[in-house]
Image (cartoon, rainbow, N blue to C red; front, side, top):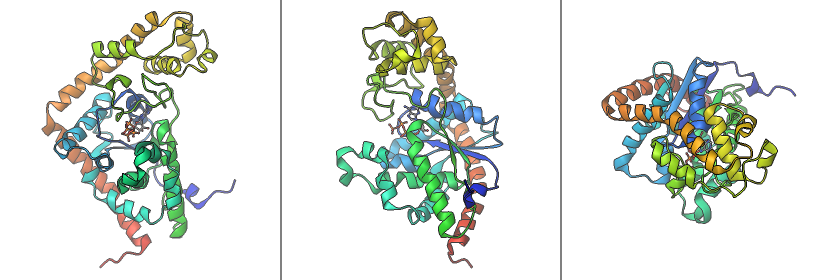
Length: 345
Ligand code: AQP
């Protein structure tokens, strides 16, 4: 295959990702993305982790709660192991260039591309006509978030695969349209891993989600051991024992999900977990799963409580993060303005 101009991008390797401060984070967010945020700090010199409050207003949150929820997500990043002295942690709306680049990208992206986005169809449901333009345009802002830093790698869960493909299409079209070869990198999604798709505890065909109306469908990072035990005991399963091997999980999505969670949380392979629990019933497996989950999440929840108790200290971290993010974003946005041909004195 011949290299396209953007494949010759030679800038620094840089990680960018973000999460919405809509509701508290759940196990899917942790295993699908946050755990990778932490690990990538050892592999990349530059990691940028954003709390995407501009995205959150597509869901119309309470303005009295938004700033506090943004702080809480930042606290979750730090409690999970993101180090604010090595990585940049900041709130999206504090860096105005995100919105500015999103507008430029609105004029690059095509309506047909956005109309194919399955997440919009899922979130808008039958009410697409009444959805905000922002919800429809969400993936364009996401492309701007990433490319404002010329990020090359983006750790996300599997549900974000299509949006990341759109970011690559936007980067490529911008480079072509403006005859600016290799201006933007084509960002690589980092999706692989055992937690890439964690499903609802009640329906193994639906992803675990912050916006599911039932709290029983998810494990929140702040759930205590009793709540975790209760949710896992009530998780949907079937009357058969666990299978002895992976192949036996076919057609049993809820069971596959619980075994996958056990494997991801305890850092073991699915086969290894089934070697221990194959042939046993859920009466044995579920309490063991609840225990490994509680042991994994308790220290994170405790650290989140400690961080949330001192909002001024969190704000200082976030203000420093926003300064460091702007220092990267503003020169790139200035270059974009020149490439597009905007006036400057
Ligand atoms: N169930 C999941 N399994 C694995 N990864 C997941 N992610 C979300 N759900 C799962 C990943 O977590 C990051 C958070 O992205 P977001 O805050 O933009 O939320 P989202 O992708 O829209 O999903 P949520 O958290 O469940 O929120 P709602 O309910 O609003 O859809 C992303 O990397 C995502 O892939």
